[in-house]
Every structure is written in C-alpha cells, then in structure tokens.
View 1 (cartoon, rainbow, N blue to C red):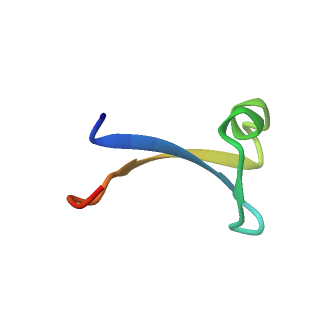
View 2: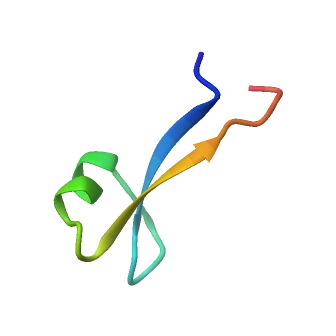
View 3: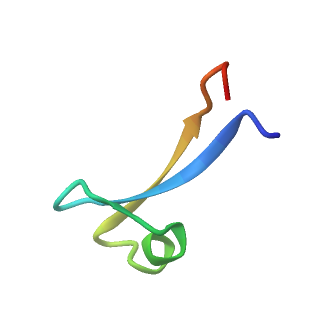
Length: 40
C-alpha cells in the first residue's frame, strides 16, 4: 500500500469531490496528496 493518496476538493465550498472530476475542473477544484496515517 502506498504512503499517500489523492483527494479531490472543491475550491469554493471545500467539499470533497471525486479526483477525476477535480482534475477536469482545474479552475475551481484542487487535487490534494494526503499522507496516510500509520494505522492504515
């Protein structure tokens, strides 16, 4: 398992969205790379 994973977020509302949607909407969305916690 990798130590990081990607997460999509809407830049205006802050709500999580699918990564594929975030990659398509570059002007209004962000794809974050998040470190996994040790227990997971």
